[in-house]
Amino acid sequence: MRKTADVQVAHLVNMNSPEAMFEEVKYNFVHHYSVTEFVDVRVTFNDFTDLFEGRYAGYRACNTKFHDKIHTADALLAISRLIDGYNIVKPRLPVRRVKLALIATILHDTGYIQRKKDRKGTGAKYTLNHVERSIDFMRKYFKERGFTKKDFEAASRMISCTGLSTNLMKIPFHDPADRILGNMLGTADLLGQMASRTYLERLIYLYREFKEGHVKGYDSEFSLLQKTLKFYDSTQTRIMSDLGGVSKYARLHFCKRYRVDADLYWIAIERQIEYLTKILQDQTTSFRDKLKRHI
Figure: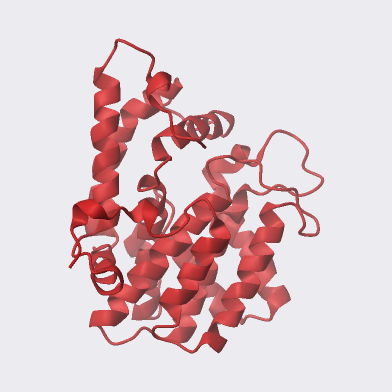
């Protein structure tokens, strides 16, 4: 086994490249399934890239700096690692359900994208209803791509697991595998963003999205940083309890693929929170002066 101190989750893949992260998703997938099954996932990822870069008919490019291509790729890589870890120790999840989960992850924040005719503000104005808008986009997309109604219903329920105010137990999953994968998507959405090396810097962008989206409770960038400590506590509860504790499968992935017997996501997150705490306690200089990583 490698020493945990020698390995960081941000160094395993080029985390500034959604394309590099996507290839790692494929790598995790083909350990358990035929590479031909990955075609649908790649098609959706290519469509997602066109959508977020402004080449998808009828839509503007992504203009939210927190909920951007990198954020989606972070979540996608995280869920692929959870699925890999699960499949290492449990009966393999059905390939069709896994493909739907990966596709749902790729589309889970499409609700921030504006239509061409929508020229007012940015997609951040949809913060409070972006989950519903993402599901609406996926409904249209699935119909165009020939997915079945049952496929859409399963994938939409998985996306619903990313809504922080959603009562997860009230989501009517019809397949046990779908609930596991929905929990993984909700978990990956949180792990991916909070373990990012630039998470603290990107919180400035998140504040601006919250402000435009009329999210209450945040009066300034600094207040959002302060409340991130409480968000961390609530996130722990949500991941370990509400979302079924599926984050434990990340450790199995890192152990098998990288010979590191640790959950590198939680290690990265805890380092972020430790540094954030120091920033908030030090009143000698502006908090902005302490957020130095390039974004």
